[in-house]
Image 1 (spheres, rainbow, N blue to C red):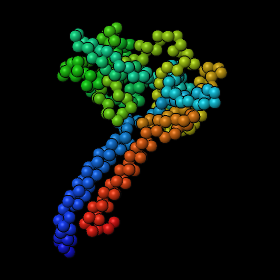
Image 2: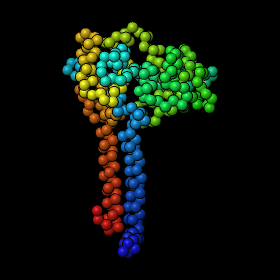
Image 3: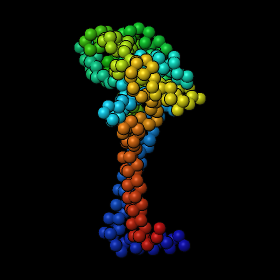
Image 4: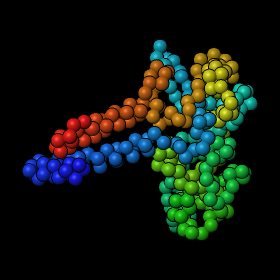
Length: 303
């Protein structure tokens, strides 16, 4: 019976060769495109999955209201990270991190621009970067320390061990390499090739220690048993307890939402990249089904 079915199908295809070729080619192209799109969707949905603590990691966001309109910001006061860990139950760890810096590094005549940032040492146990050389525990013991990615290490030192060697940063200070970490994947929020102590820049201006000045990003790790809603209640008017008259409202924004749901309207989460991913995925399913349906029609099958 199966043999008869195959014969009938082949005869049907051969009778309409041009039409059959177009439909089969269309099906092949459709399946190939769908496969690529499915891989892209998987990449989007697994964003930041390289961080083992992602379910307990958050960044602090601020809602500020002016003239009746609420806007959401990433920047927070400099003293916030240390204070949160001391004041709010459930906060296991907290760290400050600056924005991305495209910095010039030099080793003799070799000069290379690399993207990275400044951060507190507490960021290492939170992100759990994979160190291939050096140890996170003593990475920032010295002010002019720097940890670099494997790619950056190869650019400057090839296969040689870079630990203990120095790179001149921004044509100002020599920073000693204390660690080398595995390159972060492309579907990671942090696309950095170096990290240096935030203490290098957190005292440049007096206002950087003021609770009314927002200039750094605050990252928080909660205890696995912590209640996020309870923490958010304590966090909501937290800055107001430090700076009289400040009406800023703070809240935790989970790492699992950073890539797909990072859109806020009037202070509330309102979609984001998830809308685009859902639309593309839905269209992909539709056109894949349509291609299969046309092929089944071609071989006189009904679905």
